[in-house]
Amino acid sequence: IILAFALIAKKKNMNFKIIAAAAAFCVSQSFAIIGLGFHYAPNFGTELKSTTEKEVLSLDSEAGNLGNVKYAHGSFSDMQGFGLKLWIDILPIIDVEATYNIQFGSYDAALSMYGPDGALIKKQKIELEFDGVPFGKASPKFVSMNGDLSITYPITFLPVIRPYIGGGVTYYLSTPVLSDSFVGKFMESTGKVLLNPENLTPEEAKQLANDLSDALTDEGLSTGIGGHILVGMRAKLPIIPIAAYANYKYYFGGEFDDEIEFGRHAVEVGVGFAL
Image 1 (tube, rainbow, N blue to C red):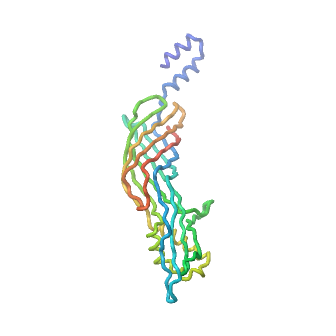
Image 2 (image 1 turned 180 degrees about the vertical axis):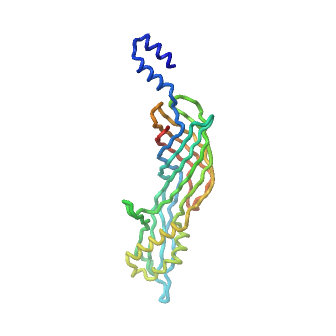
Image 3 (image 1 turned 90 degrees about the horizontal axis):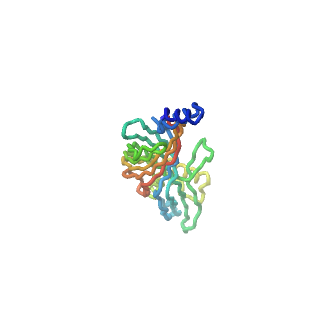
C-alpha cells in the first residue's frame, strides 16, 4: 500500500512525506491491544414500589397505650449508574472484557408517630448521613453493583468500527431495602425511646433515624452469581489512543431484596484510553 502511494505521489508530483504518512495512517492497527474506559451505565426496569403506612411499634406502658409508630417508604423506577471497563483485543478470534458497574435508585422513607387518639404528633424523614462529602445527607438508596467477565466475538473486521456479540458471567452485590419488616424488628429492639412521643425532641428523632440507617448498613450486602449476554461496538481511529464504545446487556440470575423487582436491561456508553 505504501509503495502504491509512493508511485502516485511521484506521478502527481506530490510531497512523498505527506503521502507516506497518510499511507501509514491507513494501514496502522485500528484496534487496541488493551484499553481502559469509563462509562455511563443506566439500568432499565428495576423498580421499588411504594408502601402505605404500617404500624411498626405500639407505644404501650403501665399508664396505658400512648399511641404507635408507623413507617412507609416511597418508590423509584430505573437506576442511574456508571462503571469501568478493561478490554483486550490482542487475542486471536475472540476479545475479553472485564466490567464493574455501580447503579442506584433513591426513595423516600419516614417514621410517623401517632398519639392514642390517632392524631399525628411527629413525622421524621429518614436520611443517610455521609461524612466528608458536599451534600452531607441523602435519602435512602438501593445500590446494585456487578462485576462482568465477558467473551466477545467480532461480527466483522471493519476498519475503525468493531461490532461484536458475546456473553459471560456476572457477580452481583446489592444493598437491602428499608422494608416494613426490617424497620419493625429495629423498632422493637431500639425504638423504646418513643414511649412518650410527645416529649421526643427533634434531636432524638434524628438520632433514631440515623440509628436505623446504621442498622441497615450493618445488615450487609446480598450477593449472587448469574450471567449476561451482550451486543456492542467499539470505534477507534488509527494511531489516536482514544476509543469509544457502547454495549447493551441483558442480565440473568442474582439475588436481591424481596421488595426489589430487578431490571435485566443495561446500557454502557463510554470512552477510554486504548494502546
